[in-house]
Length: 89
Length: 139
Picture (cartoon, each protein chain N blue to C red):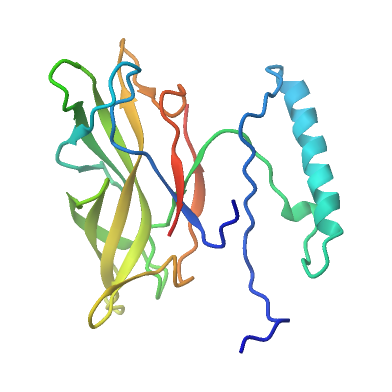
């Protein structure tokens, strides 16, 4: 597969447990203290029979600039270059 | 009509999945160094791509994209506030330049990149444990 655009990372908010593929409910997002590039929110499995709960980590992946009638991605416009961050152990 | 000789500075990402790498760190590093060297020779032989060995970086594991919290106009810090869920699997916040001499404002876009669950006392990344794999989508 050949892409000619930068890519952003995302995971689907679905339950990671092997025996369950339900969607996850997502709670109110909050900043990681003074680090506003990272946001956390509680997540829980929407399947009543599954007890999976976790904390979802969000990363800042783009900035949008409002034109007269639409919002423009600054990464797509080449005005902001995304960095690569590694998942931390 | 576009000039066929026109170029743009871009990054090329090659993803290799299902690579079985040695557990031993020395062996793994030696293998990755050889891999990088071979890719480098391929790149050096490509017409019109002006790249060298030093332009090639190789690493293992998943990464995520992140943009810096700096103003695209003046590079001062952005103030990000009022984060809220969007209609997809992410969140939005309002972004305002912290400099009094700059009036840039816009929105910050967040995406879920990991789930940190706790089966015992320690929190574990679901990406690092292999329970979920991230998708890489074009902007």
